[in-house]
Amino acid sequence: MPEVVCLGIMVADIWARPVDEWPQRGRLGVVAETGIGLGGCAANTAVALARLGVSAAVQGCVGMDGLGDLVIDAVRRDNVDVSGICRTEAANTSTTLIIIDSAGERTFIHCFGANGHIDPAKLDLSAIQKAKILHLGGVLLMPGFDGEPQAEILAAAQATGVTTCVDTAWDDRGVWMTAVGPLLPYTDIFLPSLPEAQELSGRDRPEEAAQAFLDAGVEIVGLKMGPEGSYVRTPEEELRVPAYPVEVVDGSGAGDAFVAGFLYGYLQSWDLERTTRFANALGGIATPAPGTTAGIKDYAQIIDLLETAEPGQWRGR
Image 1: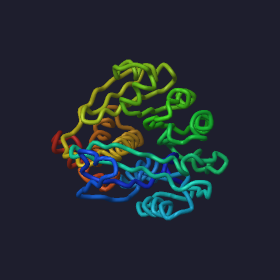
Image 2: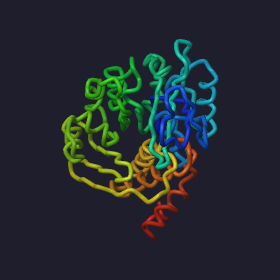
Image 3: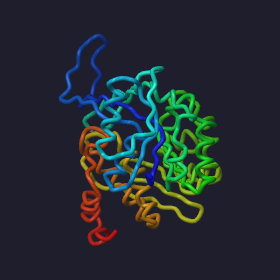
Image 4: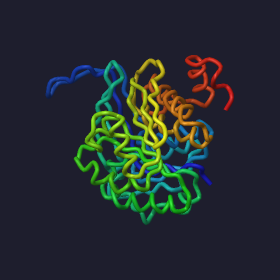
């Protein structure tokens, strides 16, 4: 059985780079590169975990279309268990148009698609309850499943001893804590980006935002802060860990890679600092290549980056 079940959004990403100026309305702009590939928090995290040697499964929903085939095939190629993926005729596979500038920063145009049709009754609850970790990825991009239905899944997993992890996405609908609030009492590890955490908590400082989530019942809060690294807090400990120097071509998937790195460290029973440094490194490794997972190869690649920055600290697992 999979050690980690990643439940949530699965997306076909269509990207273009570099775009530093939008063309005038009705005009044509030319870019150097375009591509199409795997996206979505649950899928990206599952693939990254699999490349680290973790047994992973993904559960979610895609359409009965060519993009759905693309997403499933991309995940399956990394030996991720895809038996929990449902398909629907009610919507096309979710897509995101990703516009990447010369600095690697992205602008997203997203269609919920099949991610809005995840049916709790069709999830493989047996696989979830036998896993070590349930990761819920892409919260706020699953209308119809966000909120109480997700809280029920998390609560049931926790009740059987499964560690629960939640990662959010940017909310263009403005539902924020209406959807996320019910999840927090059943969330062991909460890993939003800093901007998402600020919107959810109503607090600007990372320390205050993290404390708000701890007060709501979360055990470990990790805030992803891009080039500023990450801030992690528990009731007993807090860390601010810098990012590793990498050449950023495309930041897509960096946050999902951070999550995979954090969960990997958690599975290894590493201490919080080692886990967070590893997560930062994996997030950085995702950025020098276009696409969400193209830059991630294996465990040794991450250790090479860590050893460059911290010689002698990382060769032993």
